[in-house]
Length: 155
Image (cartoon, rainbow, N blue to C red; front, side, top):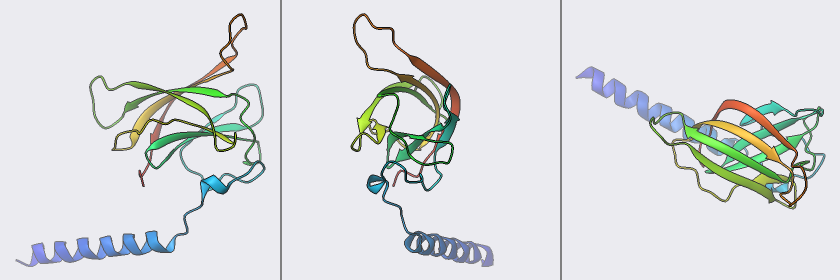
């Protein structure tokens, strides 16, 4: 008799504590960022940018993917690549759920974004391919980045 009551009390206390912490923590407005601003909070996954100083950052914003480019100091730079292909596979569910989405310039050219809503739970294996503009007769410059696990809250 005592255990279920104690368990219920602990669950209620923890849910109240988490809700209070979420209310108190200020949520940054990613849409208000500009070139030269630091990319905060440090969220998502990072890869070193190949052949250049800096990194790429792939993260969930809500249930959509967004890709940022940052310099060596962690400040936002304009994307040197206008297109990214992201292959993703749910790391929780198994069996043939690999998908591909195209990210293009968005947010006044500050980041690449996908219009696709990614189903929850937001825990995915992701691979990234950066591309220059697609045009006939030109060599396409591409960079590929290996698998990482990307998690998100989906809020």
